[in-house]
Length: 172
Picture (cartoon, rainbow, N blue to C red):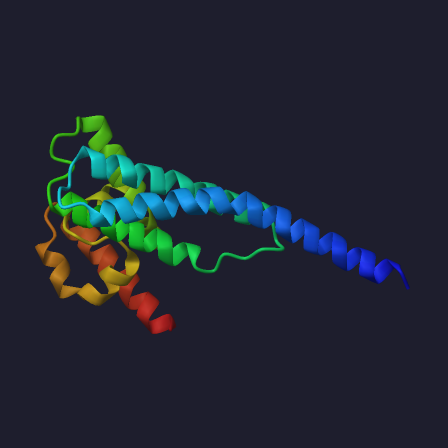
């Protein structure tokens, strides 16, 4: 009889401890994303803040994978928003002064969700991202014919993308 209240109290304390663990990375991500969105200049400072947000979001994802008591269903949407913000910064020239390695790392980090579609590897994901497509939702909305405008995609890659998009649409 006393076991149930004790178990409930222990579970509440555990949930509280987990919530405290989530609080600081969530605050870091929020502050950094707000700073990026508030800036007029899209420069290295904005990229640095975006990196802070990205690291904090990765930390939150890691915590969420370790704790099944607390769900973060909004995390993928926040990540998608951060990648779209990164794409906008990229389009505005924030990465123009980066060296080749930093430039490629930025593209890899923020274009990674595109590789979830069959037929998209890291190179194709970077090309799509450089064209202004930050995630699969934007790619799906683009439509198969608009893919012809993406610079650097060969015929075989375009065919694979169209096939994957069509198969995905058919499966729904």
